[in-house]
Length: 190
Image 1 (tube, one colour):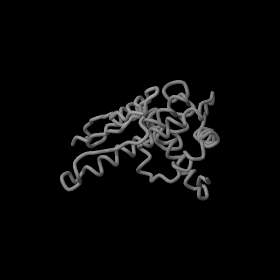
Image 2 (cartoon, one colour):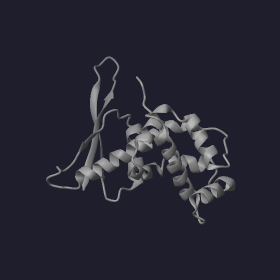
Image 3 (cartoon, helix red, strand yellow):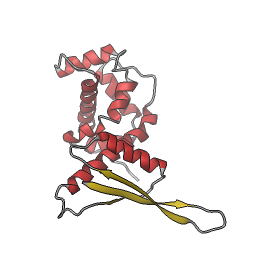
Image 4 (cartoon, one colour):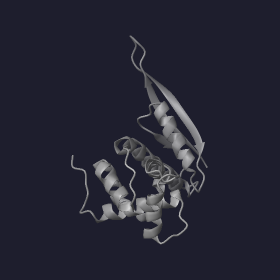
């Protein structure tokens, strides 16, 4: 089902009023959603400096699945974008040996907005963090190779003997989500 993602970009020409130039990205959304598509849309919006995204496509009466497909795409884009925006704030030389240490480090260094957003997510939405925040955790905490202690702690706490870096990351995110969800009503005050 083709969906046009388009927007207008403002270009400034010296001594003339701003000119509006249409910038268009056409893509096809397939179910199940390919996370690489979401990353491509993010890259396109950043490279074109898109501030407002207009999504156009068939109406729901013509394609009953269009709403859900577009929602899933935009939802994935949102979580990829907030995760990427918050990665810089979380960078450190921390190499936790336990799940508890990892969670304490993440909570101490995560921006409040990200904590609030994560705590409000449904458990089923956590998978949306796999390619963004999950990749950050795997790389930052050395789950691919050098941090055997953290990987073993994930295995012990989860009861899953054969757990790889991806599984361990999902377990850490789930434990982090559980801890943040128990926090009394996290919210951003403006």
